[in-house]
Length: 212
Image 1: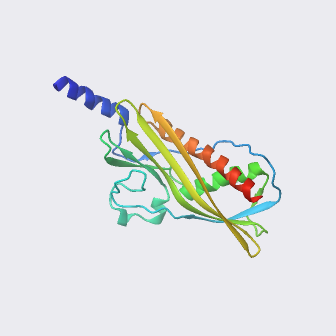
Image 2: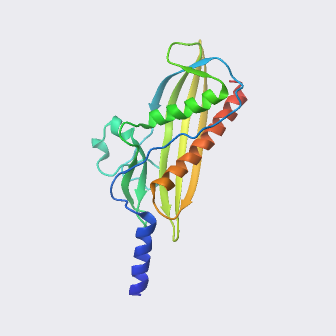
């Protein structure tokens, strides 16, 4: 019985890795070549981080922080992308972007990749087509199993295209799943890479449907 307990404890440690501190991971946006069916320029006017964080949520897919949520500033929350969990599913350390990186910045990179691949030129000055972005979800979590961890990442956005007095809002999301043996940076990043790719495909489909 003692040997079995020691084995299971060692397995839990091996699967989850270090989960007590903050894990910093940079999320590279993958190259994506869509069908360049559009033309013209587009300006991204705003990207709002509308994610709602909760204190000790029951669902690991709900954004949360290690420590006192009330003491966190909006700037600090903008860096958080997930939460680590121990082998028993308990919430532990934060997963965050590297210093100087933010979730709105990553969403801008992602949208720029998709829109430029479609044929748009992204500009900073006033133009006939504007895009306002609300980030509804951008989160990752791990669910430990007996022999592996399921890493999941989800991205949800509301994209409002504005041309003169006309507005059109599209809901575009992406989901990524990766099953790995250890709680490594690479396994967390791969879940996001798959969510990015899914998001870009769904963005292209949504733009196709609306003729944008």
